[in-house]
Image 1 (cartoon, helix red, strand yellow):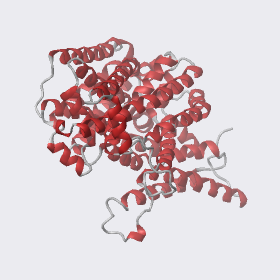
Image 2 (tube, rainbow, N blue to C red):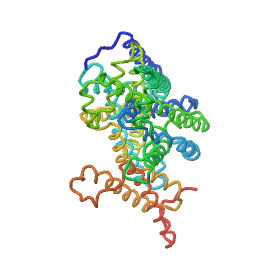
Image 3 (tube, rainbow, N blue to C red):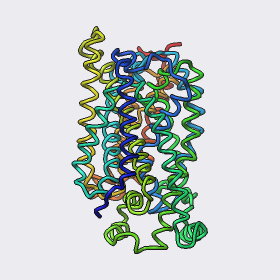
Image 4 (cartoon, rainbow, N blue to C red):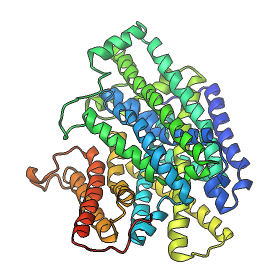
Length: 511
């Protein structure tokens, strides 16, 4: 499929990229100190931080994989979005005030005070591994539409986009990231709304045909409401979404760091609500796009190449349908805007993840273990170097996953469950129980990680070697849920047991 971008599309895309880089350059001079590079002087308004958090949520994973999911199946995974308001309420009531009171740039520094250096290091490693998976997936999905558009080598596109986004992140620090996120959020919303409006009217019989075809095939279904825990039912996805969103708002460095950039605790709380309330309808637009594409190509199957139909019949390539539609059917100018929106979604996530990973490299690794007294100049060198290193790691991950044919969204969620390690449970244990100490927390983490490894690997790497009785009967989405509960409940039970026997623990929660 060799397409050519119209001149108007190139103009729109070029203007967007120039604007993004220009904003980064504008904040270059103001981000030459560690405090401004990592926290923007703690002076940003809540609406701006909220748009940045929203932009972080709407990565290219959302922009391409959610329509792919709806195209291949239905709206079951919209339950993930429906859990977001509850997670936002919990975050603004407990998580945001906690981080604002601490004033720490690192989201994991308090774990060392609470349980010891091992807890902080464990959380940092889990976060960095998760970001490596996230960076790789986002870069891959950013390169995908260009690959579909121009038939360029996918690896070459990944290398190019990896270099550009890493360079962009180096320019403006967190303030440049947040201001650019705000601009990118508006672009991606416009792109999603335009596509959701154009596709229904492009069907031979108009919007009514879309809803008739979708209804006949159950495409608007929210999935099974049954009690099964071995399938991705509505309830499984809802619980998974609640835990993941609590993890995002509660212990993800990318979010906790943004709370510190707001000029007041109230602004930080309002930023969370703005992001959550924007994401729910925006994700609905993306699911609608996937459903509309299903109706479109069901009504006109000849409009989709046979090679794509073959892969779709095998349960693959769902996230390739939307990029094909963009470059094949959208009018000049609109295609450029939508591709710019995909860039916007990806760059927002990439820049935030790279800045967060570089920040932890400085605060939790370099200054904690190597040079605690590192000065501003040395710290900036580490921040720049960390950004480059994690850009290389993310690009390498994207190259590694690019040959995969399975759903990118499924792969990302599996990787997130593995690498996150249920660390939300460790955070909750420290906040809920004042008596749980180092031994209880360590035991809970070990058991939690073992549970996650068993749930995922028994179906994946070890599936051919283990008898069916030893394989996990639960859906892999529940791995992060069960891992979180295992850490929390084991820690609570052991601390209560120690209390009943009169034992003492070295590390107790501060009053």
